[in-house]
Each structure stands twice: as structure tokens, then as C-alpha cells.
Image 1: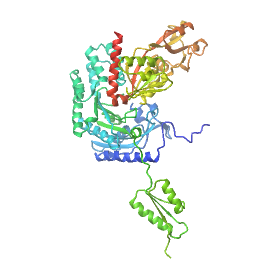
Image 2 (image 1 turned 90 degrees about the horizontal axis):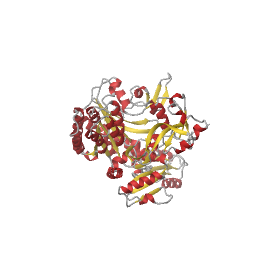
Image 3 (image 1 turned 45 degrees about the vertical axis):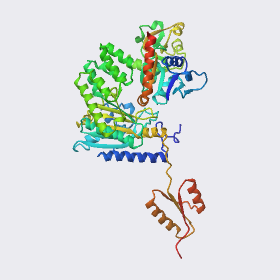
Image 4 (image 1 turned 60 degrees about the vertical axis):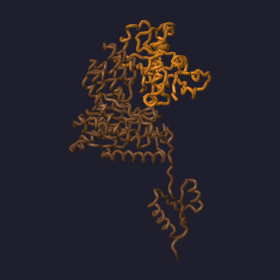
Length: 399
Length: 213
């Protein structure tokens, strides 16, 4: 029989105290950013019915960590923060007036996903802004995404910003079949110009329209990208998508965050999940985006409450991996002081307890030795562990 | 510094040729040694020599920014990458092959056994394209043996000239996909190192267009 008792399962790791401390601090900063903007934290159970993901076609069954309840119903570990938050807003919070501003900082579990800094179990922090539409709501969430990454110390941040309605409108204008649209969607996601050209040729597109599709994978940049596309589209939905992006850029400029943003109209999402603005955030040293977000107006109605929504999540685990690889040194937090006492002196212990308590009022971390170390041993121990102050009580009750 | 993962062997040589023709100093990559990492600080290029099947992994995880690898490996590995250029060399076909008398009769055999080095491509082709279940037998080489000694009815493998097949009394029965070498790029590198990677892609494309003329 194999014995796995020594190991953590594939895709999961223990965290060292110094990383744990850094992570808790980062969580605190995220909480500060989210709560500071008026978002309320929710906690979802971490175990869900698979149905919330699978019957809604949001996540494939094979990507979930699955188990059973006593009645044989399929359960899964929380896959993301958004879907449980939507379930929450559509049920427990259904009478709460809109808009709702919710946030979460929790562990997510994904089957088939690890490597390159990715883990099967990881922590995400994110917000969901529900019952709000328009570019200003989009911008509120985008600004929070940037602010949250900056708050935890990510300096080299790059946000790609797209609008899925542009691609939908463009393909409507070109009169593409669903099949051709799907083929081109996949090709754009892979920046595969060969397939785009072939599919466009088969669909009978003219040279200019084919070029427009190819531009989706080539053209990224500032507001000028929006203008380059504008002259090439007629579809009203695609044009309004461009207007939306332009407005978001203006608002981001007011936030002072424009420098982080690249317009990328080839960012179109893998499924039909996103319905409007879409963005991803990148930094150096991890092979995957640390931020993902966008507008998902059609998810809540699957849970019986029709409301627009926009949100994002930041993978704290990936972000910390990136920071470590970017050279962040974690300080090993040590106790500020240690208190020992002479066991042979009556009353010394009571004095030591009182002293430790008093010190704890002032310092974050004070050890009270309970191993009976002598004064010499106590000094050695504090030297070894870089504890700046050691106190030894060798006086007892006065007789 | 741009890290480029190359598939050890002929594909690596051809990839270096096209980079050189596109105006890059690739002398570091040509160094004849057993070193696996060939780096030149002056040119800002670092080449890593990897097993072809590992190239998509290096690139997906961001250990390499860019990679050159055959489409067969990309199809088999199914990695999350940008596939930006079809380099046109390393051309061959992924085929279903078997005894010549099976030509046109492949669909008449129920519950086929298929020997292959490419189980994912094989599964995708039979299940998603041909809508049938097959038994896949994973092999590591000399795949042509399998139908000859009755391990499987057919095989799925790379066919270049077809000589190995013909000499063993086998023939191509169906084509699964056309294969050639591709340039792949990590999704984050494409954003974070756009200033270096995008010009490189453009230069390679221009060079390819020149060679075609």
C-alpha cells in the first residue's frame, strides 16, 4: 500500500511562517482596499453543489474537485469567488437593494491546474459589483483591480483591456456563421493568424475585413488603437464597444492609472461568460495573468435574479510567487522579547507572567519560557533566534 | 533578455537559420557544446535546448518566452499559448496508417485498436472528428510494428516521405492534420516583453515572406 502521509497532494503546498505572515498582511491590504471602497466581505462555505458550476455551463465538471454528500449528490470545492457570490446575491441577499458591492478573500480549488506558479489550491481576493452597469461601474472595478495589485507591492503591472462586444459586433457585420466565428475566436485567443486567414477566406471575406480580423491579434496600445479600428466597423454594437473603451480610458486617466493599461481588442474571453468589458493583469516572473475580470451580465439570471454585474479577482498566491521571483525578501518575523524565570524561586513565575503580560501590551510578540531555561540558556536561545530582548526573573516573593 | 526554447535537433538549426536571416545574432545558439543553456548578454538572447515535447511546457509556464516546435507536439500537448507563426519547415502529415488493403475501409472495423506516440491527437481525431471510440495503445517508437504483428489494426503517426510505411507494407489511410514548425509565445511575455517580442515576430514574418518569393 502506498503511503502518502508525508506529502501534500499534487498542486497544494504548506506555507512557511514568513510567507504566511506576508500573505496575511497582503490579505489585510486587499481587505483595506476593498472595504475602503464600500465593498462588504462575504464568506461562502467552500463546499458547493456541483450544479452551481455545471448546470449553469460555467465550469466543466472535470475541472472541479468533486465529492458526495450523504444523499449521493455531487459536491465540489469552491472553484471561484464569483459564482458563489452570485448565488449568495440571488438567494440569501435577494431582497437587498441594488447595487451590491461584495468582496471575498478565499481559497479556490481547481482540478487539472498547476505549474508555472499555478496551484490547484490558491487564494484569490476579488470584488463583485452587482446591479450596476455602464462604463463608470466598469471603471470602478478596474481601478480597484489596479489598486489592489499595487497595494500588495506589484510594481510592474500591465493590464490588457478589451471589450467582447466588439468582436461579436464585428463578426455580425461580416455575417460569419457560428462555426466560423468560433474558429476565429479560438484563433484570436492563440494569436494564430494562419487559421484566421484560412477561415476568413473560406467565409468569403474581402481583404479589408480579413485585415481587420488580423489587426485584432496585432494591434495593442493606447487610445489610438480604438481609432484605428473605428473606421473599419459599421456595426452599432461594435462601435458602442469602442465608445465604452474610450470612456473607460478617460476615467482611468482621472484615476492616474492610464499608464498601466493597454487596449487589446483581441482579448475576447474563452466562453460566453463575459458580456462587455474584459481585462487581465500581468506582471513579470509568472507565466499566467495574476488578475482576471470583466462584465458578466448574464450569470445572475441563471440563479433567478436578473442583474448586471462586473467584477475581478486577483490570485494572491500567484502574485506572491511573482513577488518572490522578483526578489522580494521575506523577513522572518521573530518574537520581540522572551521572558524566563528561575523555577526554584517561589513567586518568580508569577512575576514572570505579570512581566510577559505587561510586555505584550507594548510588543506584538513576547514568549514566556515554559521549558525551564536558565538565564544562560535563555540568552543563548534569544541570540540564536534573533530575539532582541530577554528578561530573566530571579526574584521571588519578598520574605 | 528573451529566452527561446528550441527543439533539439534539425528543427533547432532551422529555427536559428531563420532568426539569423531575420537579422539576429544567433552565434550563441550555434555553439557546439553540450550546454543546455546558450546565452549571449550582448544580443540579449538566451537559447535553451529542450526535448521537443517539453518546449510547449517551458513556454506555457513562462520559463521560456518563445519557442519553436512542431505542430504535432502542440496538438499533442494542448498547451495554453500564443501560436504566432507557421515557419513552413519541418513539414509532414499526421496520418492514420495501416495495411494498404484497409484504404477506404477504415470505418468498417468496429472497436479499432490504434497504436500511437500521440494518444491525445488520436483520441481527439477518433472521438471528436470521427465520432467513434477506439482503444488507444501508447507506444514510444517503431510504431509501424504494431499493425504488422497484430498489436493494433492501425497506427496514428507522423508521415514525412512514407518510406518506412511502404517498406513495411503499410500505407496512409487518412490524414489527421498537416504539420509544420511553429513559433509559440508565452501569454504573459507577449504583454510584458512586447517591445522585444513583437519586432522579432514581424522580422521573422518578413523574412519568411522574402523566402517565399
